[in-house]
Image (cartoon, rainbow, N blue to C red):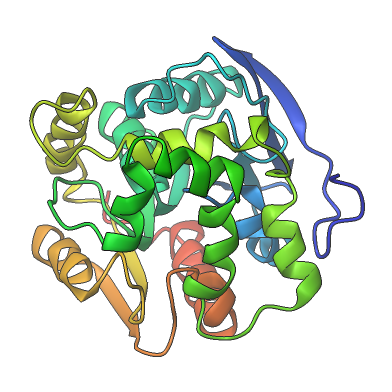
Length: 293
């Protein structure tokens, strides 16, 4: 299933958490960069970031439980707080004392949730088409996947969520081998359980089980106000629209924002050649002692 993935020559490592083993990449040496993916992607999303930066930085890229090379337990509570706890356990195990955090999609709430609990560890933050605050906005095409029975059939039966992302999340057509890499971990009903649980875990109302956890994440953003932030945003994201980009800039007015109007949700696929130099320059500022912290 996962052999010879295009542009992914890495060998994941393993770490035991409650519920199973997480896979993660640990590549390169130097200042630490932690990259946190969302749904329905996995560490494959950051493959080019790792390949291009590992000569100068240490890249740690976990697969959330249920994603990528990680275990995919069926009877597991795939909740926001559990994902944050898993990330926290992994980074504590690796004894990370200082890092730059890169987040995308669900990685925003998960990564920023961890950062808000550990603001002294995080020195810089890169935001890629994500949110870490409450919103009632949800596209109909995602809302349908939350419906009982229908959602199970679409997401786990037809692999509709992960496969739809191959063309809905990009504006540039993916090569076939790259598209195959994105969906490789999700090849049967069982292995798609986390994709569905992520969709179901979107907290839109106060009675949702993950609502209070998201509120905690949102409140903790205040602890990160003085952290240097780079925002790179795909303007043709049907889910994380311009509204979310503006919200980040409102909350972090000192952030360096770059808006790519022709890029989609998988902004690293559509605008990689523009974004990589921005991330590299942002990281090198830290090396040169330009941090405001």
